[in-house]
Length: 193
Image (cartoon, rainbow, N blue to C red; front, side, top):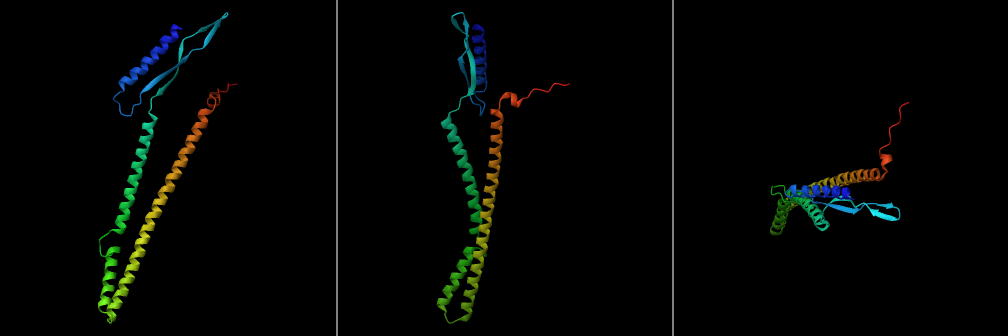
């Protein structure tokens, strides 16, 4: 019983030493030792205890903080992706050159105003029609670029989901291997004849 107790205390001191030496190590999780009663032995009509045994050494994790950290990391990744998408969309819709949607709309509405001022002038009406055609082409071009961006984002989502499914399948396979009995995982070598 004394030997078991000394051995358990030696392991406990190693765990404490490990915790102290890594107290300032980023990402280190404190460990603690879990003890359980040792098996009993029967001597005649008496049951004798054998002391304690190490049940396990576990990392001390605050599940609430761990969940909050995972949520924060997920939120950050989502925000970065959203910001990148909005920047790409802004570059498509918010360009300030002469072919931008904004410039085309301004030109079209200016030509409509000129028609109201000079309704009898055929050249003003023709110019308004040309501005309308240019605006329609610009709207179609912008819609095509937005659709391309949407398809690219969907492709990224499908690629990520395929990667996630592959990782989940790998984890499933590892869990099956871990749950197999030791003899099945490490078969004995066949004797040579």
